[in-house]
Amino acid sequence: MEKTLLYEALLTLSTTERRQFAKFVQAPFFNQKAAAIALFAYLLHHLEQKTLPQAQEAFKAAFPNLAFDDAKLRLLNSHLLALLEHFWMYQAHFAVPEQSKIQLASEYRKRNLPKHFQIALREARAARVAQPWRDAHYFDDLYYMEWEQYQFDAASRRTDVLNLQETSDQMDRAFLIKKLRLACLALSHQAVYKTEYHIGLSAPVLALAATQLELPAIGLYYHCHCFLSETAPLTHFTQFTAMLLEHSAVLPADELRTLHLLAINFGIKRINQSQEEWLDLTFNLYKSALERDLLLENNLLSRFAFNNIVAIALRVGALQWASAFITQFKPRLERQFREATADLNLARVAYARKDFGAAIQHLQRADYKDMMNNLTAKTLQLKIYYETDAFDLLESHLASMKTFIRRHTAIGYHRTNYSKIVYYTQQLMQLLPRNTAEIAALRTKIQEEPVLTEKVWLLEQLDK
Image 1 (cartoon, rainbow, N blue to C red):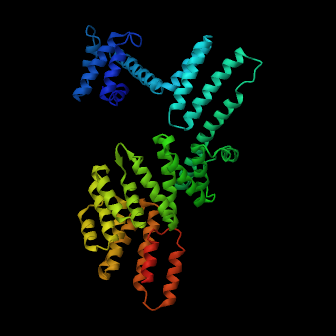
Image 2: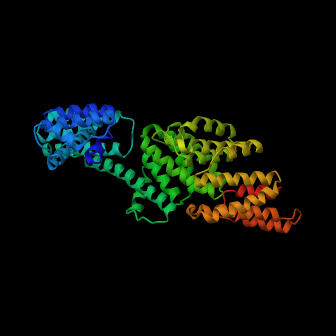
Image 3: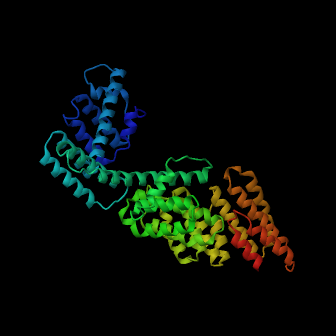
């Protein structure tokens, strides 16, 4: 019975929700089947004891005087699941009191109670405006209030000027935010997964949005769309980040998370293309997201974000900040990757401080099961061997790394990047110190590589 849709759904309830649902099931207004109350009591006992319910026992609890009937039990399961779904919808309905007040005003209007309608709508508007968020839901609610007012006025004052302009304006604002958000998500996704989305009305939406940039949500998604579509990216990215930091208090956490991630991913893409001017901008976005806990999922920080944050912090010279970050957020890493990820990043900090001995110790302490962590560690070892003139170790390491990259085809486009790192390091080793022509030629080749994450390091070695 533990594999039924009902029991799987019940398993998701918190302790508080279990108590609330028990009261819901017992309320005659929602449920008049005593068998459903008994069945839930039986299932609740097993939920609390973390034991598995049995079909025969469940039936006996619900129908103590009847012989087991599987079809009858399944029907009762369906009824109880429908009650649970009704309970969730009931909770969702009253989760946002301001929206409930709009629906109350609508009910008063339909019942032709004008005084009640005006009071309810006035309270709904005051409650909604008092809320801090100014996202698409906010303008949606303003639209519905204007629409209710229009329907009331159209029926009672047919010759007066009506509020159709206000109704249209609020609808436009909600639509612009939703449409621009969807367009930004599509642009970001297709840049990574090499697909293509056709988002209708993009041109008129952008044109209309350009006239309302003072509204934070519209302005943010407008600038985001511009840099994602490569329209003066640095200019719009700078305007976006300034607006995001200034207006973060008027947007809910899920919206802020979406905006931060869209910009961070774009910034990382530019950094990977060796465009150094994006480092500080992206680093500031990461710090802003961390301060607001926007990068945590189930109270955990992904190891990929962890690695990126440390890498960018080191690139901008924030060594002390990176070290403090590793200490603070290590407990937020997934347990199975925690030690390896922390040691890898401590090694990167030690390397940045030119403490090569400590860096090697950190690298040797961890078992890198994660493919990308493994490649990052191997690259760090490569740089240490080169900078300490351990060329015998380096030659062996490069051969091993080359074989590793060739065997692991699942790393996708990263394979090209790391293969080039190995190739150009080998080229560095073969250079004659005073052969200026060869040095210049290699410098040009490295500079022209579109994606080479160690481009800066390779060019620094040529300078030496």
